[in-house]
Every structure is written in C-alpha cells, then in structure tokens.
Image 1 (spheres, rainbow, N blue to C red):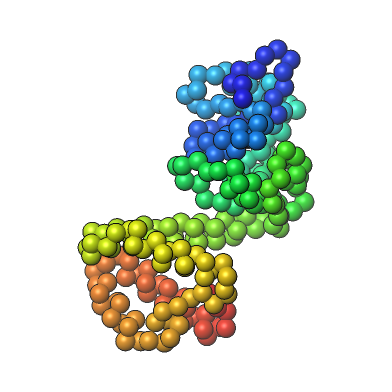
Image 2: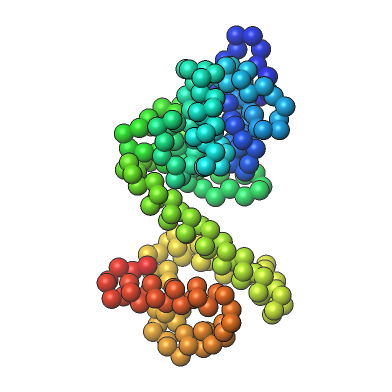
Length: 245
C-alpha cells in the first residue's frame, strides 16, 4: 500500500475514514494485496491529491457525514466512483455495499473477511461491479427496504450483545461466576440458532407461568425487567398469530 501516489499512478481505491470499518476494510485489502490509499481527518495527507489519483472512493464515515462529505469533494475528480458501506443510507450520490458482519476493535483473519457477505440494492451496480477483486458472497435487497434490513441487523446484533455483556457482568459481580464459565452456554446457543429453527428454550416455550413470575419478581427495580416483559409480550403475540419469533 502507498499512502501518497506518484505521478500518473492511479490507485484502485481510496479508503476514507479511521473507524473500525475503515480499519477492517484496509486490513482486508492489505491481506489480499489490493493497492489502496487512505485518508482521515488527522492523517496529514492532501485529500484532493489522493482523490485525483484514485478510481474509487470508499466513504467509511458516519452515516450523517457521508452525503455532505461527497458533495464537498465530488468536483475534485468527476470520474471517481463513490461507494459507501452503510446498511441504512440510500443516496443518489454514491453506490452502496453493506458488509453483513459485526466488526470489533480487533482485526480478523483473511478467511473471516472472505466469508463476509455483502448486500447491495436491486437495480444498482452489483457487488462484483463495485469490487471485482473480491470473491465474497453477495446478495441484494429491494430498493426502499434498507431501513427494514438494517433495523433487524441492529436489533439482532446489538441487542443480543447488550444482553450477553450484561449477563457476563451480573454473573461476575453478583454471583462470582466468571465469563469463561458462560462461554459453553453462549457457543451452544449460537450453534442451536444455526442448526435448528426451534432454538428457543426455557419457561416461555414450556408455558411455565410460575417460573416466569419468579423471574419477574427477581428483576424488581431492574431496568432489564422491561426487556424481559417485552420478550414475553412478543412471544405471546407470536403464539396467537402463529408467527414464531
């Protein structure tokens, strides 16, 4: 990777941003030896020069900042292909390809990156058209459905992470159970979700009202009591409608 291009050298990608996604995409490209440049606000590099020497710009910054950033810089290179990776934003200013993955502050191995699916919008440029160097699995969703798609990604990913982090904390601090003791439970839960359509277990599925009431009593004055009750409500509604959660 070169940070500053030489004369008459056009680099395939310019990665804009310094957050988790920009770091992961940069590392993925580095592992595949795909040439790229990188710019972020405090990088000290000349953005205009990097844009003029690039064929595609990946704008990997916060959703609210993407459109203003492109509008401010799109005249620097009229042939530049702008791409963003937001799962929510739908804008005529840039193409989109959302990685269907959660990214931590630790970098991953090459195989994890290569297995990460990308989601584009039907009728727009396909994933191979945007990233011909990548062999990742890909799919597309109907136009106008990005908010629904991303809401469910966020609900499933972030909500479960919050619950597991809280479980680790409560078990360690209040019961003296280490988080490592909970890993088999976590791992099997994930395996059950992958291997079965009936992964849900516990008092709800058994109709054990005494256990459910005992759970709620133990969570008195706990902010997660409302979360527990919300899950009960969703499950009971699903049983009435026949749509299983």
